[in-house]
Amino acid sequence: MPSSTSSSRRLTAADRPGVAQPVPIRDVPDRSWLAVFLCALLLAVVLTGAWEWYWRAFGAVPGYGDDDALWAQQRRRIDAGEGNATVLIGASRTFFDVQLPVWERLSGRRPIQLALDGTSPVFALENLADDPSYTGRLLIGIAPDIFFSGFEYRKGLARYFHKESPSQRVGKILSMHLVEPWFAFYDPDFALFTVLRRQPWLEREGLSGHAVRKLSITEADRNNYMWSKIETDSSYRAIVRRTWTENFNDPPPTAQEAAENQRTLDEQIRRTAVAVARLRARNIPVIFVRDPSTGDYLTYEDRAFPRKSTWDVLLEKAEAPGIHFQDFRELQGYDLPEWSHMTRASAERYTEALYRIIERDYALPDGARW
Image (cartoon, rainbow, N blue to C red; front, side):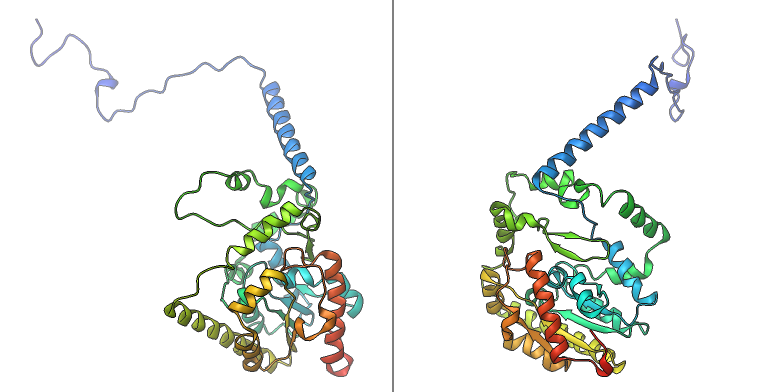
């Protein structure tokens, strides 16, 4: 009979705590791995092709991704010998409504498009004011709800522009040559998980609102125009309008919120005035443009951001000229299907009308052109 301190069984590694256990060896199936690879490749091609076909049938067309890297490419043009160019900054209306080919036809030179969807341009204005290599002309588009609210969700672009790595640059170049101009499904709005999030799942408390859907087609130099589906598809256009109206019926701000909003507005104007003064010291012409809006969007802007206490104050503090669409008959009467942006055809006519007003009323010395 074994004693209490011994055993007839020999101890193994499995009995010793802290000792690594041997990994069991698995038999590798006897398969043709080339056939497995080819089957997996075929499946990937079929699924990708089906996804592409689906979105093409929906109306999608390939376009360049308007990401941080594409903006940085255009911004670098200023430091690479085009410092005296006309530069456009602003929110999405400037991005949609000013067509670069039309401006180039009229002026003989293509502007640099640095306007951005849904973000205040003040960070870009300050970035240009800090750059002594910039000696051109500056058009600043004003969308009241974006500019005067201080909404700058993409202000990190200035930092990205200075910090962009070689691999990020090369990655964007490869994407622009090999993927973006060829595949419609590559648009972020058609990504699988984006599509899944849009499905009519049960809403949870505290979660509301809809993401802005695809609105435009962007070209390699950031010339941008409205996606025709917004013109031709009334149900899709209704989705876009519904997204805008989510903010139109908010309750009136409390006294504390109103005071905070006023501080933000004042700060936006102050920052703008300081930057414009620095540009003016370098003899850089600056002009503000209030692009058109219509319908419920214009009603909301007039109520929440009255011209007298926003636009008029901005021009006074910045000591710079401004063109407001309501002051010019030739800047009215365009087609804005979702109240905020023009169709491509309207944008082309608008760009010509805007350019001719600038040339007529704000001519540059020595015959220079905008």
